[in-house]
Image (cartoon, rainbow, N blue to C red; front, side, top):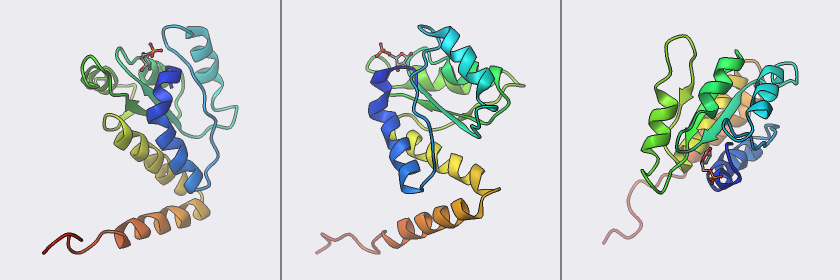
Amino acid sequence: MGSESDWETMRHAAALLDELEIGYETLIISAHRTPDRLVAFAKGAKSAGHKVIIAGAGGAAHLPGMTAALTALPVLGVPIETKALRGQDSLYSIVQMPAGIPVGTLAIGKSGAINAALLAAAILALADPSIEGRLSAWRAAQTEAVAKRPATED
Ligand code: RP5
């Protein structure tokens, strides 16, 4: 994530990965304030054993795009909801990548963080039957938890 302030949103991705028993590393890397950290991380991510990168950033959200420019690993971008523009700035900064450098862009805020974790799990599940099993079970439980009618219906 681009800042400690993004953790309030990105912790939802981490919680989902915990639930699915998928290992991850949680790092603060600012494309603007710590550019050298960004280059070192993104260039070394594959050899460090990372398979998928979830990058959450807000405002002029250059972290996901710059990460994708520096590694061929799949990069999933989560636009953080901002006070000034409610995350539309983040969304547009992340989603409008030039052809050739893809970032899989999720929804603004908590939903995007959760779905980034689920999408990362789905990517990893292609080569890992145990993750596939846990992801399938998670989705089945979600379906099961949806009531047929509202509980407060008269
Ligand atoms: C972005 O600037 C971060 O991703 C964060 O969403 C936003 C604001 O950062 P702080 O000023 O809260 O550190 O780089």
